[in-house]
Image 1: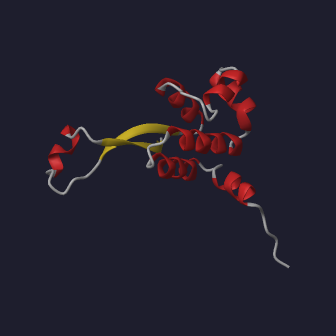
Image 2 (image 1 turned 180 degrees about the horizontal axis):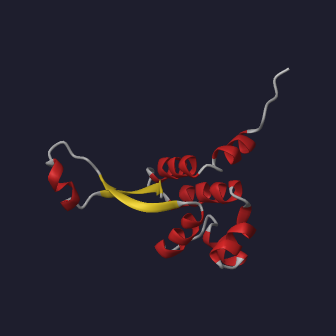
Length: 119
């Protein structure tokens, strides 16, 4: 008899690994919408021990973290950096490749997207 686990249990197990969590956040961030990104970040927080554990590590109040990670949250970059650093993940920016843009000039392009990566 095979044993099954729920999607939620599988996701929590997967997101316990910082590399998987970073890849998950990158995939969600590609849509460019903050609400799904905050939901994805809440999933990472849950997988890594929850808001209580995060509050202790970031020295932020649980209330602040719940508000920050809510669907209506509007976190500052500094706050996101503090939260992600706890899990060994950082924010970085990558240029969007354009076939007409020479490789050495990518850094000069104004188009970029958020990339969440492990340290």
